[in-house]
Amino acid sequence: MNARPDIPAAYFDQWYANMAGTAPNDAITQRHLGLPPSLLSTSLLTWDGIAEVVTALRLPTGGTLLDVACGRGGYRLEIAARTGARLIGVDYSAEAIRQATENARAQSAPAQFRVGDLAATGLPDGSVDGVVCVDAIQFATDPVAAYAELRRVLAPGGRVVLTCWEAADRTDPRLPDRLRTVDTRAGLLGAGFDDVVVVDRPAWRSAERSMWEEAAALDPGDDPALQSFHDEGVQMLGRFDLVRRVMATGTAP
Image (cartoon, rainbow, N blue to C red; front, top):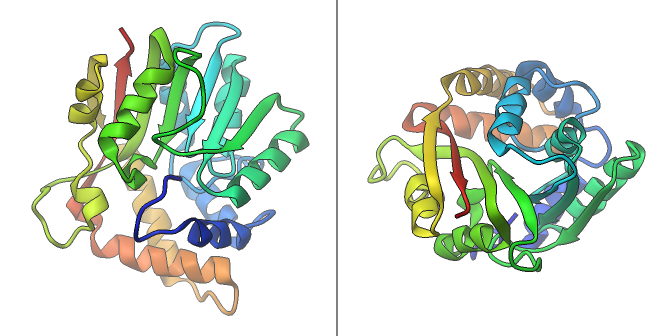
């Protein structure tokens, strides 16, 4: 994930460390999102959502896929397996990269993971055929720079797919600034993408609601991963109807 003044790298390192291996909340997340036990992630894309992302990416056979804010790598390893793409994953958290590398090794999956930033992946211009960013564009310190980076690394004709949440009302003070400022359409168009399309995904949102309801109702005991999951469930349900779930796509000219 990308650095923000209010969310240091150490926070995410500890967050991922609490979920090392298979965390107790993984089973809850997998059940509600329809994911197999082997898919470890910290994002909220459903199994059907993965298929939609794969279709939207239009990756060529043997192409290279960049996953920005890759986390533990679960979704991206699945996408790469379905498309035959070579996977490069970048994340702000060194602990996330460590776990993603281990997960890829356990699955004998050809993938490279490195510490990097939403606005600074370290890759050459036009070096990838597709870019995916699952549920993380809101963590960009400088959104304009982040969208420009996604455009810079894509080869002509390459596709970007973002999944995230956008505020129903960007002036609503009940939402944190990082959600109120998300505007995927404006970001992609401003970075020079063509064929920009942003679509609502209410079915994904419905799966999230049931998951957060179970999280908010559970007793976390002294497990730090479950405590974080429970607290996030309470928080998310409190503002659930203030945001909409979207998938945004664009093509590099």
